Length: 301
Image (cartoon, rainbow, N blue to C red; front, top):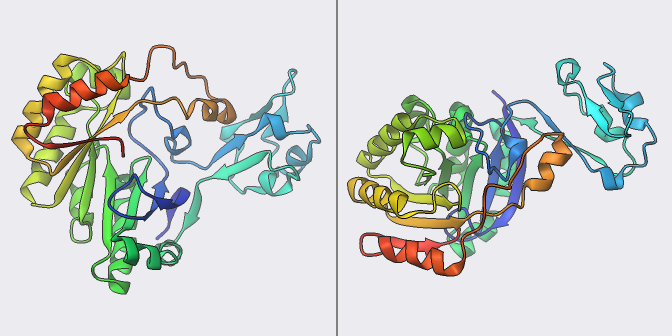
């Protein structure tokens, strides 16, 4: 068994309690228009090209065994994905770190070993490990096996899964025995708007949340607040109804940011962020106060 990982982030403080290490798993069933980790959407290995570092020496092009890389007439590096065999030789050949490969294959044991290197930090901060993405539950068997290995090493290690909920319920069932905390993303509660903004099906997201709440596992809702998509009183009212019905422990309101915009360029993807904006502090405070009588509300993380 192998899983595809596009990043391991150490000393994270926004993906659960304490100091954590977050493993970002490749592949996502959604295509959120505001995604700040676009390299995690496609399930295949991704290549980020840093134009500002590139000297156009051609070493990467020569190293590619299938000839899938070439510079176009504007000296922009292009990749023919259909011919790429994901060997990573192009990135290894670059002397200027202008190419990065994201999406390495790892066994559960190799990932567990990497995560356990930070065990001392988990111990002193009541932290742990978080599986994020992409959508980690697309690789639920891999997550479950890795989590099992972690628990064998330290039974009380806190393990969290950050999920959109846009997967089949059996994916949750695979990881339930090993997960202490679910960070459950709620982006919209209007079916048409969720479909338009993310490609997701609201019925599946809500059904999984309802089932998960019945397991008595700890659930923190995470809501990205995006002006131009969900930052309005109607969404706040529907979210309040959802909170009352499922009784999560905590609600995190996460202001939208465009930090991932540059990644789209490096991936060779077109994406416009013009329609979205970050809410100001007064708007965030209003949203928090609307919900705070019914649930603990945290702005950020």
